[in-house]
Length: 147
Image 1 (cartoon, one colour):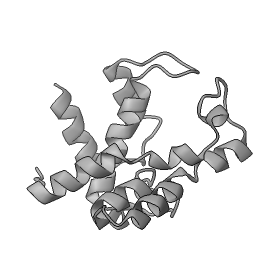
Image 2 (spheres, rainbow, N blue to C red; image 1 turned 45 degrees about the vertical axis):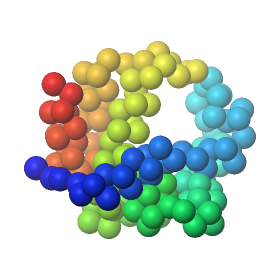
Image 3 (tube, one colour; image 1 turned 30 degrees about the vertical axis):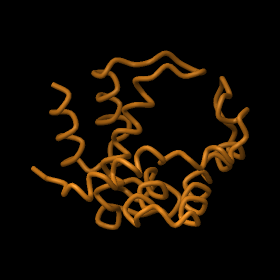
Image 4 (tube, rainbow, N blue to C red; image 1 turned 180 degrees about the vertical axis):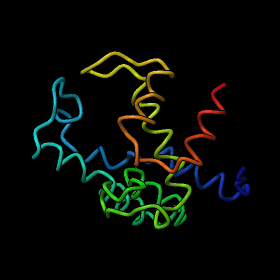
């Protein structure tokens, strides 16, 4: 369906590895909080893509593709994501790919506030409750790769 050049694959790998780097600037008690975050707390957590982007950009060693992943891995197809409220065609495919992997990983990993979900349950949430969040072309490809 789609292929990444070796350079883009390297950029996706680097951006994905560092996508949450900005969380080092978010108070640990927010990241480890066992219950639901308040609106104010969530606003603070939502700053991590910009923190990470700014810090890594200043290092001068990351490509624009990798930096785009760090900044835009929480953008959503329907425009309800953050930090820039990008939608559909404005979101780079590298960020779309990373967003899917990030959410799937979050859902299938045990957290302080819940047990890990099965891959089937995670996909059900991603297709159902999170409808409009992902590019269906990429989500379908991801799903198919799991089988």
